[in-house]
Length: 346
Image (tube, rainbow, N blue to C red; front, side):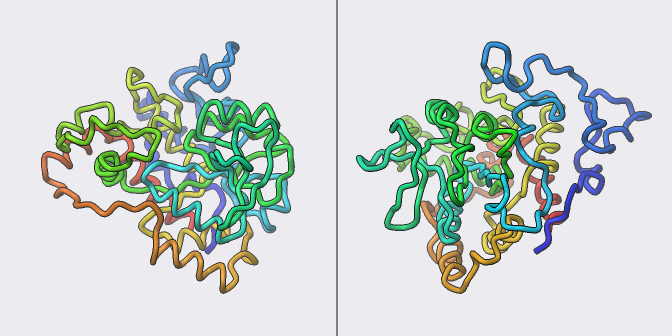
């Protein structure tokens, strides 16, 4: 599959007019990225003077998103460059399956580890060989793990075939450097189906560190009205507004679309095999897709997907579905935008 370069102009209708611009100036919203001027001026964009992370108000000026390379094809294996594949692992969106697909390709992924011979609290970063593939003893999805890996200079250690796996797409950008930028890819799932999946999964996943026993007795309608139900989680992560006390705006949605369009290879759970092929093409991994590796990918993408929890889906016109959809309207629009982006990237 071919992955085209910047597709901003082709997505101008879906991206929408930059909030705050009047109709007479709306053409400026469809200019190249560098010419966009968001309504609000960033006051705490990226890393603030206090060291805390602010919300993303301007992609151009954000010092952390600058550590991601723009979406484009390179004519060689990414592992022969200074770029680091950077996987945004979205919960209940095929992330566990994607980790297995990457292992089929022979990469070394960061992972939370607690084994005596390999744990993510050690004073050194190392590659650990497991029964199925190899991992790097870094928890890139927790604040403490990110701080440790940044302190130890993960990006500068030249670990062979390193892939950073994180659910904290913005905070973990601290692990990248100007010399070793990241190349972002993300596996997306319909946001309403994803929230419903979390509802059923949370009822049974006693082994998860974020297990919430109080959800077990809730109905789906009750769940939809609690903090346990996703509230535009994907959009919030992209613009770093994870507190529900922070209201999302049209500007935030605009910025989230912009980040995906400019920085991300988008893949989808309902096209796992095609997504695996696109991923390999994007990173120049043709040699990693020999017959054995492709059979491995097919096994986990189609025959034995990982960490699945089959459950019923309510009808789209049901009160339950509508209630969850209403909590995720920005993510629903962002997902539709990403589907169009997927077609343009193919």
